[in-house]
Length: 181
Image (cartoon, rainbow, N blue to C red; front, side, top):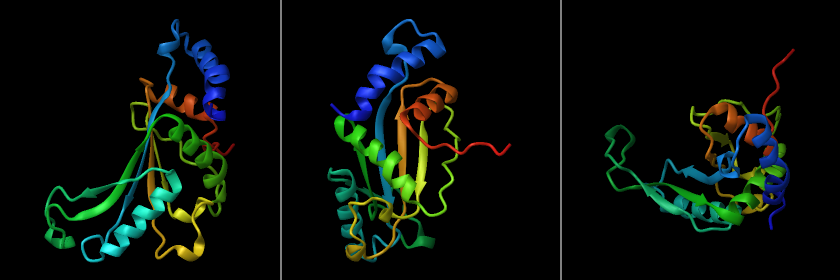
């Protein structure tokens, strides 16, 4: 069993139940899925860039991503409907827990001038963090990178409010910024 999942079940869930006064274990917020999204701006012009992004995401998460396509044509960006514009992958189960563990303990700490992530959730207890480069993950070999790409990581929880979601993520180890006092 994953280290973080075991910690959630044995320590974090009981603590959340006590803090928020839940009667049933199923009421306690939990992590539902993690979505990793990488946009490739030059996708239609440079198919190799899409292949490199696909390979990078596959190396990081250990699962093959899906190519996302444009829903509308946008002439200013020279994008036609159906053009490949990025890759995304949805993680659940053991891969989700393993990725979250690496994100919190390794990748975020390797960012330059890291002082914590913003603590703004989306209103439903879900959290999205943007990473500026894929090199923060140790799986990526610096020499094999063709271009530095950012990625968006969305943590989807079952919590009803931002307060519950924030507390769950804090207990899971998400390094939120502390207010300056």
